[in-house]
Length: 365
Image 1 (spheres, rainbow, N blue to C red):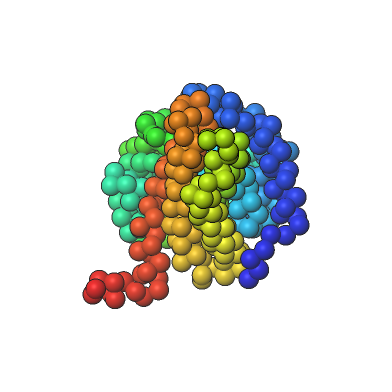
Image 2: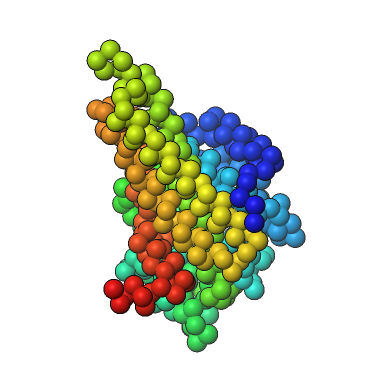
């Protein structure tokens, strides 16, 4: 498995950086935070029509470009740098479940061309993303239960719901979402919408089993880790630039040894996070048996790395870093929200230990 970035991926990164710099500057992010939809439908259409992002990792026979999670990781890293407001993570997670499932492939062309916003609903009132904790039920063609923290659930055209039936936990597609009882939840990170959705005897169809759900959650963890990597890199970049121009006692504060050490620590975290993302994305494309552990490790490490670098950015910017006018708070809030999404770092570390057969040994200590 090659842990390198190809020339084509670099070209994709450069194109995305230019696009998001133009279409998602900080002023636009702040504007979208206040809108009901939480994203710009025009930019969403451009992402699909001009860049083909929604269909990047969807198979060609389903209307996509047929690339892999490695390319998706490049996209998410650049989105993390720009704190992009879009239902992209939600839609890509749902697409991963559909591709891995035995049904619902007819929904993929709409996702690929940007006409369909999709999402995956797993967590419930307890807040757990563990498949074993799913309590929603599917019986007689109808779904019953409540889902919390549903990414962009308020605007989704298709909702894939994790639910139990006589066959165990599976994935069920709800395609008529207009009449569902939805409520947008208050969140620290205003750049990303989460919803609570009630399913009270809603018609649905099965599109995948437990394996499809597991694959989707692993891909989501890798994608979110890549987004966190992008945010961590950006907070490092803005901090290094600031300490070069901020003067105290007649010299740049970046010349002080204590500041150098803190910036160096941030750099090590970012580069280690990059390795974790490359490894997990490579596993998703080439070694699916290694993906669960690699995805959990990447999500745990990148969540902590981003949270630390975002906090350091605020500290090293001094008083201005704490203000609403400075962009550092956008990254800090995104870091905190992403840290909890799809499971907190401790939960993913527990999963790595369990997959390595270390749970019993840890319990004995």
